[in-house]
Every structure is written in C-alpha cells, then in structure tokens.
Length: 111
View: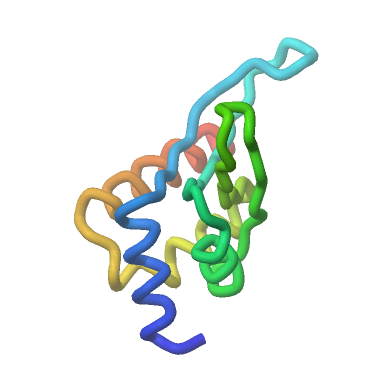
C-alpha cells in the first residue's frame, strides 16, 4: 500500500468517519464493551477504496428512503491496525478520539 493511498484514506476517515467504544448489555444480561470504527457515505465507491486499504465491511441501508453505505470494523486488532496505518495523516481531533476509544476498550478488557 503506498503512502498516498493511506493519506487519502486517512483524509476520508478524518473528515467523514468516527471511532468509539462503549459499554452495552448483552442479550444474556452481561455488560460488555463494543469498539467501532465507521465511515458512512451515500455512494459506495469511496468506501470500497477505504476497505481495500485498511479493511472492514461495507453495509447497505435504505431505511431512510435513500441508499446509505457504511464501512464498519469492530475487532480490536483490525481497528488498531487501521488507525496505526492512518495515524501519520490524522488530525489532532481524530487522533484524540482514537486514543480515547482504544484506551477505553483496553481498560474494559484488561481491567
């Protein structure tokens, strides 16, 4: 993967994406932690390009009456790798969000 492509992907994520970690109750009543990195767009082509560079899965939704595509990744290793690859080109706000989300997730998992 060349640097220019990763810089482009980082720009897309920096402007259009989000990363978060949060707790939620599972179907059997336990509290667990969830990590998500996501980018949502009206057109899929940009997300396909991001997916080829850093991974994730592209989902389709038309419940709002128009097509929406979302690239998502949840597994810690995949999210951490994607952030690491984009890190040099991320702005300070997205870097802080990534640090907070990954730190929260690790704190919950490790204790």
